[in-house]
Amino acid sequence: MSIDPLYLWQHVLKILSNELNNDMSFNTVLKPTRLAALEADTAIVEVPNDFIKSVIEKRYLNLIKDIFSSVLKQNINVVINVNPEGFGSEVLPDDSISLNEVSETKTLAEDTTPSLNQKYTFDTFVVGNSNRFAHAASQAVAQAPAKAYNPFFIYGGVGLGKTHLMHAIGHYILQQDPTCKVVYLSSEKFTNELINSIRDDKNVEFRNKYRTIDVLLIDDIQFIAGKERTQEEFFHTFNALHDANKQLVISSDRPPKEIPTLEERLRSRFEWGLITDIQPPDFETRIAILQKKAMMENLIVPNDVINFIATKIETNIRELEGALIRVVAYSSLTDCPIDIGLAEQVLKDILPDGKPKQVTSKQIVEEVGSYFSISPEEFKSKKRTKDLAFARQVAMYLCCELTDLSLPKIGEEFGGRDHTTVIHARDKITRDIQEDSQLSNAVESLKKKILYS
Ligand SMILES: Nc1ncnc2c1ncn2[C@@H]1O[C@H](COP(=O)(O)OP(=O)(O)OP(=O)(O)O)[C@@H](O)[C@H]1O
Image 1 (cartoon, protein in one colour):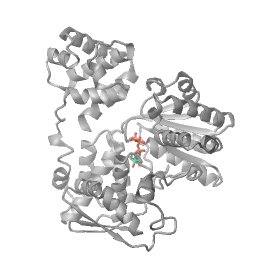
Image 2 (cartoon, helix red, strand yellow):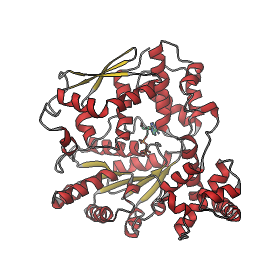
Image 3 (cartoon, helix red, strand yellow):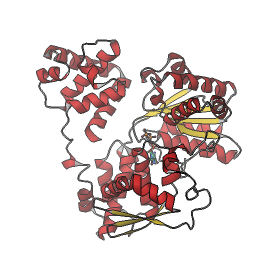
Image 4 (cartoon, rainbow, N blue to C red):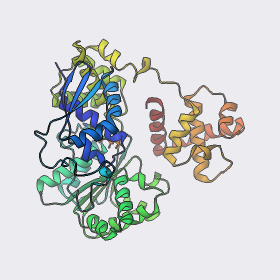
């Protein structure tokens, strides 16, 4: 059995898009491409014209090679060939634009049609205990936009299906009414467009674009925390849409009240409607997701291998899918049958002996810092503001839990604090976790991030 090049290429592009942080040139240069063949150790990628070929070769070739090599666990050469056939007319014409203009090709007026992933529908979403409520609420919103719950706020850890549900809502609404103006975007893109509109003096255009739509699906809202001007603009967009009875769907990696430096007026608005969370899937749901993915992609994978993957990867559905692809791709490249031995071999580096990797205090400080929007230096500083002191205690607690460092050593890592401070932090957070389920979830997801990413 061989892996479908289309499927493999989509997977590579997804990783690439994440690596490039949704860089605007992605849609212009990298999307109109396809994997024509994967022969031995060479991937042949087809592009519509010489211009795109030269941009990819100059900017992205090494990254693409790295991604292929890591997905397929062997060195892969990548060759870019020009083949205009079958790419359609929407592709950027050859030489129509210079290399340094690539990231400027999208205008504000453009792109109000949502870029919804065709695969992210309610039909392809596997429902389990961890996401049942979020799924039911999403369906209610899709069936009665702006009537059921407005705004609708979904939160949960990385790769657990928030974007999938948002797209499913968008698809459903468009099926019922294709004239409906549905816009999906990340809060980062909203911020970038706002910045561009200020730079290009196109504020009015920006406002018109976002205040005249019927359904706004905005992903990863936590990124607007601390960005005053974006919050201000989003506040007005929110009000304009809500007042006009338009649906807002918002996602985040945490509930509104845990987003630091989010303005109170926005926080309270996010709490007007329904807030729902998605938890990591249980074992049965992980199995069901893997079986569904295998079925959708026509992959034949033995049950014991599915069980093996579902046992090993517990928290992130994106990683679950990635592991399945790796195993199938490796088997098709090496002509070896898919069995547990092969799966173990292929997934070895992401599952080191099943034991969690060695954790350092630096990693803990980085993850906790990114969660609370605090820089690593601040953890060491003498400052004791409430938020900082709390984040520091969480980081100290995690150092006690996840590293072999002694208490004095942990104190040292946090700006030379005494070991009794570390004991106090450890005991306090242990108590807080027992009393506060949201904190408990947050600490659990931080632990998983530190241990497995
Ligand atoms: N319940 C599910 N059934 C089927 N596939 C799922 C389910 N949940 C997530 N997935 C798949 O897992 C992958 C990651 O999901 P998605 O991108 O929606 O996660 P996310 O929560 O938005 O993550 P992030 O926080 O990184 O943005 C997608 O390919 C999605 O289709």
